[in-house]
Length: 475
Image (tube, rainbow, N blue to C red; front, top):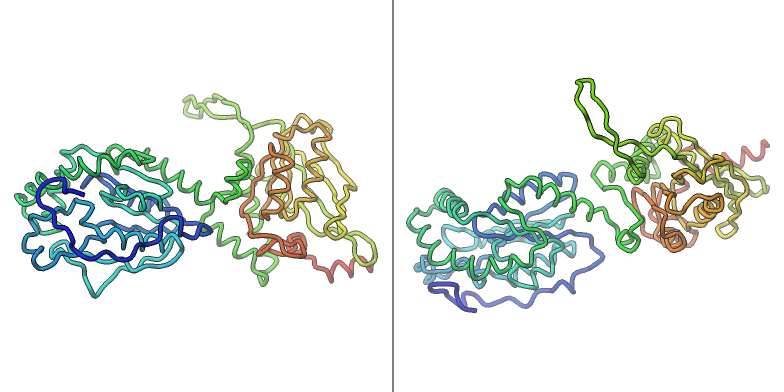
């Protein structure tokens, strides 16, 4: 590849062995890679900083392409003013690929540190970067090589006026890199502008998002951050079934899941944090109900255009019973644990019951239901804290449909879902919505969700097998 303009030194350093391409990356790892490109001093760093600040609930790391400049030899350093630092060959792309491939595969890496005054790498020091939820790679030429582009989940091009970029470049290079204005202007005219026209600007076509005005464009950055948050909490099953929704994961939510999954947590803490998570699930589920526009007048006499809640709504909790050794039923796990959160969000809401008999895993049988008479005219929030095999919910949905409830008016709310249950429900009822706080790994041989949280009803209501047997003995 020829230089954009002026002299360009080739053969600076021998290339390292080819690094893994995107096909070699472990696809099971959930790391979101964002590429941020644009002309010199276009505002790429500011955009990256704004994204990092707004994604404070997630782990975010920033990797700069500038760290991968090839170090100049002694001879090349003497003629540094003739060297084209904006040419693709000025970067060690092979090492960049290796580092990014490891980060995306969940491994930590040592990123080189480049000294812009001596034009050499600091041989004794590196910056250790750990794999994170979001990995941002920024640089003027990060879109130039297809192998680098293929590692990215989102590509952002930061656009800025040429005069603005030149002004910023002069300020940066004189203050941060110890150069005088004349050398900066000479370098800009000989190398920077021609390289932008030949390499940077043509790569703009690969961008998914173009941000005019750089870091000053708060609207664009807000939209990008919202998209990233959505992708981060989107399980692979959400891509397969667009009717499955997982509430946005934050450190608070992960912390509450840690508490309720701990086998040694106290009953009071289990109930408290379960209620908090259930409330979030319920509120997210309510967001999928239809709304109508409503104009009101505020106490200041101003007109406010808002929305009105869906009026025709009810909840239905799924209650299960299992047989003990004495063939007498007792309650094991119940959607009743979710009723308080629903009542707190929807004042005066009607709540029905569906009781499912459970003998092992295959003996599901509907034995009781009490539903509003006009349920066919309502949107239904179906409540069950854990979706395992999906058998109980399957029967509950069948009953609701038999009672005249349209499938697309059913929203199933739960705390934890197993993939097997999601497959079963969504394949049979593709129009219902499932809202959960987390999708777990799988079911074990006993049809229990793994890693799961045990028998939710027992833990929530303070019962266990021994206590239940004592109760049955007394009866």
